[in-house]
Image 1 (cartoon, rainbow, N blue to C red):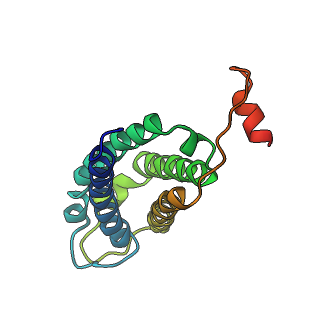
Image 2 (spheres, rainbow, N blue to C red):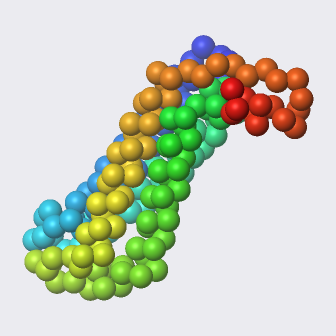
Length: 161
């Protein structure tokens, strides 16, 4: 990613992926929270494949960023929190689909979502908004470059500073 236009192009793809991901997930989560109750929940669920595509674009472009400038990510607390929030969002969606989705899918259009579904939607929104904020903070927080001499102890050495 050392060429003049590579980083801006990959970053633009990252933002497009984020738009697909967050736009789709936010609409779904807001429906779980009770917004747009007149629309069947299955109509909102049709947006989920767009979120999956957006997530795949972001993972791919994010790996490119990490490989191009690893020291700017692996030592960056904003990146650590971002990855934690992505993992929590993933755990949240896994629990949602394994426990409550079948009940939510069969709800009539005007019905409120069950409490656990509303909680899942709220957790999801908070996690993904946190991912966005932390992603922006990565740019503004540039950690020191770590240059430890020992190959196996460099990460521990840098973290302890």
